[in-house]
Image (tube, rainbow, N blue to C red; front, side, top):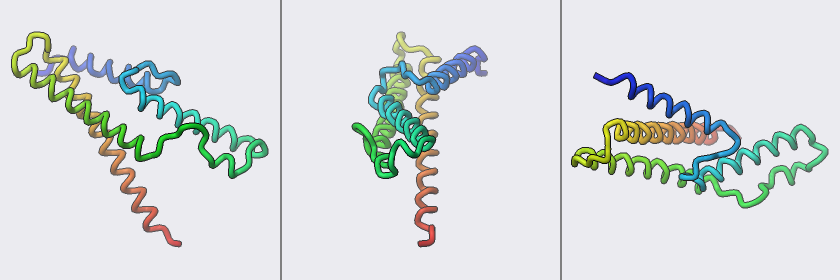
Length: 143
């Protein structure tokens, strides 16, 4: 039977991660490149929404031109896939250590790593599905 304390701990960690994701400053340095990319995109969206509020300030050509070192969509997607792959590799490694009897690894740690891996993979799969839907819609648009 599953212990309620472990489930509550996992849920608390998920809530903490969600609240940290909504914060403007990113405190997690493990995925700093991905975090910086997300922060740059957030600033661009904010500046674009501000420029739409004041259309006289910036012409249409200037508003469409990205400012600064902006990674391509392919680079961002590759970074996300690499992060998911790293999560899965770490979960597999810690599960193997637990199975081999490593006293430094406990079961809750293994379960959290496996759940983190599973959630990140499911999120990536949903992003892929949305991209495929968008592609199909664009292809089916009349000219």
